[in-house]
Amino acid sequence: MVQTRQREAIFSVLQEAGRPLCREEILRLGRSKVPRLGPATVNRAIRELSQKLDIIGVEFPGQPRRYELPAGCEHPHFICRVCNKVFDLPIATELPPAQAPSGFVVKGGEIIYSGECRDCSTAYDV
Ligand SMILES: [Zn+2]
Image (cartoon, rainbow, N blue to C red; front, top):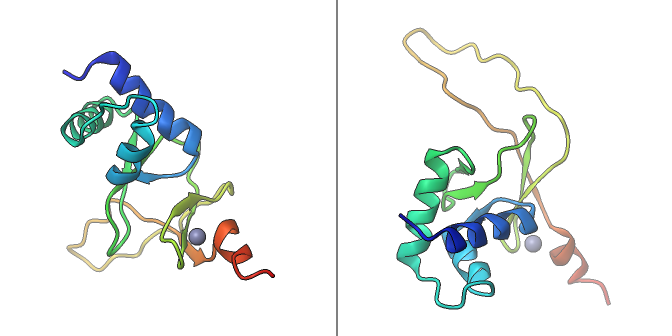
């Protein structure tokens, strides 16, 4: 069982970020709150928080699994092609119903946009 303080630190890291974070990002940002936070503790806290559905795992092809707080509604994600960070797009969306071939079971779907985030798109400004 992960100490409450560490679990709360990880939870507030996700809250403050306001976007899905991978393990490494959670560890790095979590250390600014709990300096002795280790990878094993982060892994355990992520597991405990996901089991209680306090956080949700999101996965994109070729990307590390990320975690975010449960959102009120379905929303698309945005991947920055420069820094690879993932953001939530605050747009209520509904996936079109999937007409899967017989024998297929659809268990989820995801709308992903890509481009440049604010930090990366202004990096080219002079
Ligand atoms: Zn970026």
